[in-house]
Length: 314
Image 1 (cartoon, rainbow, N blue to C red):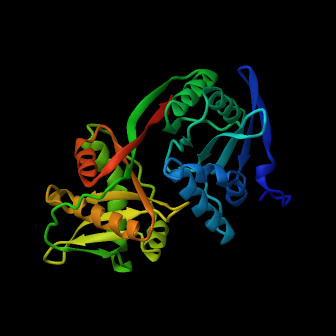
Image 2 (cartoon, rainbow, N blue to C red; image 1 turned 60 degrees about the vertical axis):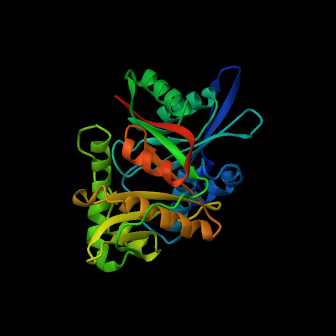
């Protein structure tokens, strides 16, 4: 809510786009955003999984009275000339460059979102999400700001079909406990850097998970640890809270010295089966440049849904 007590969702601007026009509405109140677009997100809950889970988590945080973060955090709805939802996006990423995340939308809608975002006066240096919308958005932002846009990472969204049980290594899967919190935080923050290394990309990856974030995930039973036969933690698999009947697996992290022993396959299979037994559909993302993770998930029965990309805007 704004200082005046009115929802931030009230803000809207109309931007000419091709033969028609699109209204781009920005919302800081996640509950009102969900009220406006929940039906749209529920139409394809696997495709919308990232926006849906983040919006629900943000709504719960706001309802609990949590202080807003220092980084940008807002949601956007793009409507066509008839007022129908043409696209949805959000800017909630805690790590620089705080990219937008876009769901599929017409090219002109993506350009309208780019223009509206540019008019907000916030520098935009990244965009993630469905292709071609994320590419069109990034190119338009680059054009408006006099910069350039390039794809930094190709990702792919998978959904589980028929689970194929892998051979299980020694040890067992158990839910993470608060005594594991320091290790979970370390592995969460190591995940991005190690995944980039496996995909052949160098450079540092910012650590953005916090002890509070880890504690909330452990409290809700969304972090699982694989212990080897000696009771030593060797692997971690997490998953999101379900939104519209879908949960997203991740992160999936095996300590470097324990890789290649089947821990990731076994843990992801067990967590996926647990969720499926509750009537929850499961999905996950992979880096297309990481052959190991793609091979593992295909072997487990995960099937490609849509290609996405992470783009950087100079």
